[in-house]
Length: 399
Image (cartoon, rainbow, N blue to C red; front, side, top):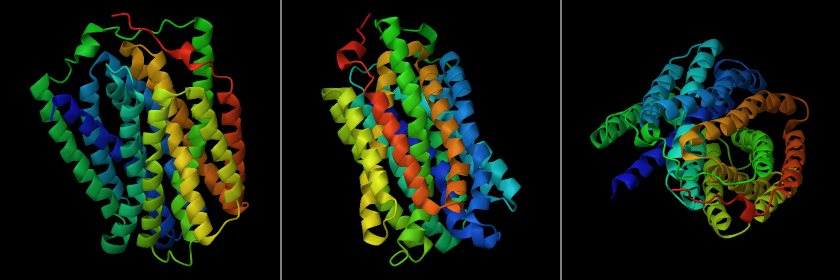
């Protein structure tokens, strides 16, 4: 296996862990802490909010440091830092203590997207499939969060759901450090040192502003949708699949099933955006989201499970589209910062989604949440219609 392929594997595993760590608490809060700490679901989930705020706000700093220092070094910091933070979260005995641990997880989790995705698209002409494959790993992290956490809750206690992934991440960080040190000393990133401008977008200024405005708008609304569905799905299944999901492990298995099947959407979308009109693909995905959320409003049982697969398929399918847009429009030497800006928007909105879920659940249940998400998806659909043709968004190589 070539070194570039090994590096891609490390980056993909990092994406897996990034999303897993951010959602462990969602399952713990829904299925164990509400009884152990005698707090309602709506009372517990705001303690995750600082972590999601850090997840968003720290992305721009992480991207800046990576572009100025070393992308490789920042990935080492990500693996080890998030692993230690997770283990600290497992030691919590009060809501305040776990909020501190989750905030530290958010700070280190913020590193991955601006840095890891810039490394994934580096020196590639077609970025759809690499981003899609990497995205599948991220989505499997989302899926495994509910499954692994539910299993560990039932077999070893909720604290182990933080301890075990933490140890694995630290070990991966040490292995990656050794791997990149053999290639070059951490800090001697040739992309950063030489500032090679291998892909300079020769695109009209007005078009550039228009596309980035659409990217940031759809990113914000998409972040709300993604966070609401992935964070709330274990609780949704606990309520709506009560006839055949009777414990934490079973809820985790159904969530894993839905997330894993939906993860395949990124492979399909990655292929489509590399070979067809990005605007058409984006509009279709957004329209299907709106329809599926509307239909999900009052469904129960098997019908709810099947439609959950459908709406998560298109929710996950949207993820690589904005990343492809950023990769096409941004130069290599400031691509980490461009991705950072995108994910600042994404994760800042995602942080606000956490208390929103709690408020909507307390004032109308998940039926109201799905109504809000249907409107949000319709707004994304309208925005996609304003994108220019794909031929106007293809930068030329400048050498």
